[in-house]
Amino acid sequence: MRVIHPSALVADAADALGAVRDEVVVVGAAAVEVALAQTRAVVTPTRDVDLVVAVEQVEAVLRHLEDQRFRPSTRPHERGFTWVRDDLSIQLVRSFHPFPRGPAARLPQNSAFAMAGEADTLRAAEAEVRRTASRCERRLFG
Figure 1 (cartoon, rainbow, N blue to C red):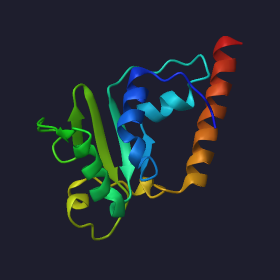
Figure 2 (cartoon, rainbow, N blue to C red):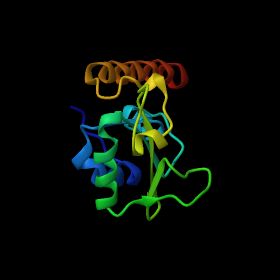
Figure 3 (spheres, one colour):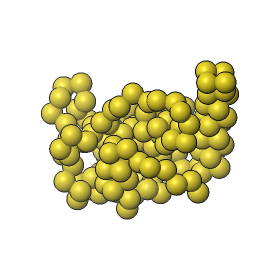
């Protein structure tokens, strides 16, 4: 376990997603921000959190988001996969499934995210991001 000082985005996302933390995998800028938290690297601020959800968990995650007062985005380019509360956006991508049903069918899928729910793989990927960041930091800052 690592303790970090979360940005407002990470703190808001952690608060909103705490009850479904085992059903989602954080990817994108928020994940990179956490991975690089103890380095001197800077991540461009963002107010959206990208989540990968296993097809079997989509309905439960959506129910939780609605319980947390998130509503579907009304922006045309975000409809179907983005939920918004105040200025925080949660964008969902589903893991691969040949015949998704219900709400999962409306989410974009990416077979690269088949690792959703595979904690060992995710820990290994996070460790690799930290190693790469450390190498870059040594090159940049000596």
